[in-house]
Length: 360
Image (cartoon, rainbow, N blue to C red; front, side, top):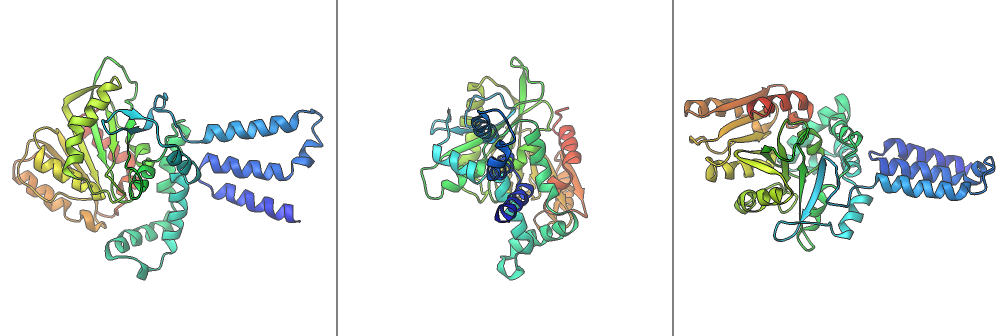
């Protein structure tokens, strides 16, 4: 009876798990519980060794990528102090394997759905309340489906959140997501799209959406910590650190087609680009956030937001003001949507960005 109860618990954990690693782990643990009974029905004398070998191999395959020279289209690459690719610290890799982003996000969202309102700050209360409404209507599918599609594409990078988390109390490390263009041709020059994440870090979740952009190299850069607040040196580093890093890896970047996007707290990156690099970026995008200025610059300004999102509520008015100032401006607006519009409308927004960035 104890074995049956434990098996049922393991199978329940298998169903609730978000990653192949933990699904396989709980499956193998359930099989190991019944190993004697299973092996007694298999005449092959080395069946036990084969079973253990299969368990080790399948779990190893399901672990996130450690190498920086894999052929995956989506990669997380650690950089040394000079911006060259390096291997992740082993303790960060192990932490990432034990607590993968998908599991942390899946369980964290379940907790957020039942979190008492009085336990939240005013801003987080607004965002989590929007999530609560969403969870009641459709669960956490808009968060889990994009990562599931990335997993099925065989790309399995580490999470960029890990290095940012350890930066708070250990030796600082920087890790960037690199997304290779579709149908990549090594001798061709490509536009560069730089993505700057919001609060809670440089999620792998975003890469599963950004990889749908056409004919461009995508680089998702991190803030120093999990806040998503970018500094002027982070944006300057795009030109003197990140583009040379990409060229070192064999990519030809068309410097006349540089684009930057800020999501949520990543508006800090877009604002710095707006103030200081309006002539060097071809476009500056604000997703679920809005610019702090409207003076005329050379770059096109793209706004993406939802009407129920307090952090993007003025986007339509700002779009009018930008156009009145003679700016090239594009607006994707869903009056009924929330702070999570990029997740809800990812196909439509990617099509919109492909058009407005002239990638297609």
